Image (cartoon, rainbow, N blue to C red; front, side, top):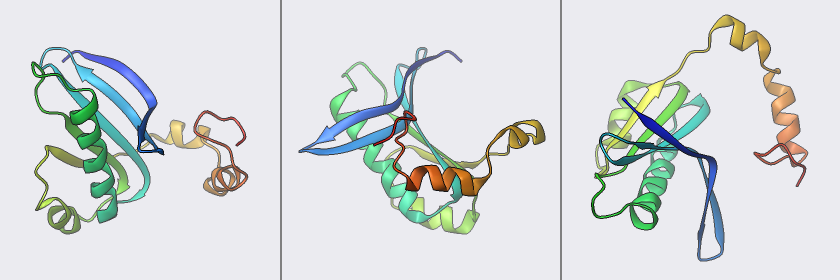
Length: 131
């Protein structure tokens, strides 16, 4: 598989409201965008709605007639498969939810969760700059 990296925190504006897609790729062989949302928490059904919203944005604003349908992937720290099944039951877009695991060496290199929460509370944006 060959993916082209489109961007991180890809900005979309909808009638004055700002939205940021965590990761956006383009599958070169299948000619489709792939929206990836990352959640450092357990899956919540609202996450599926957010991902569906982002997939719809890419479909409307980036996808061309020669492209295949945009795919959405939600990577979460944990999930309840039954909750995921119900949350995606009515989805009309191709969306997947998967659990990720960090290796012990990567986990050890990350700051503690409370330090990240404090940085967010102080108003640091996704680019690391103070807001």
